[in-house]
Length: 132
Image (cartoon, rainbow, N blue to C red):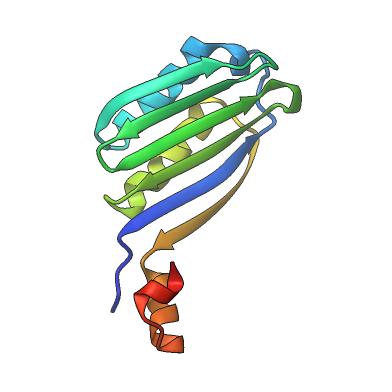
């Protein structure tokens, strides 16, 4: 059985209080807390308030990255988490962010690196170079 080598959780946190979404300190703290509580290795975090409103915050983690982009005018946050550790910790970051921001709704998908690629190689008998 082929195992994934990286897990990705990509989603949206919806119906969030917009007052939280312009606060750089709060957004950064939420991202840091969610990464640490998930057992991932935090190396650094960069956060920037956008001129148009909202905050972009990216955590560089030993396992890859976690990022949030807030949209106060839409009362939402886009979230992207990628980790080579395991499925559970990757999901835990998303669930912690949902809890911290008190999102009333969410949409989310999961992708796994390695499995689709291996399936394409097997199905089409393609060399790896043909897929890049």
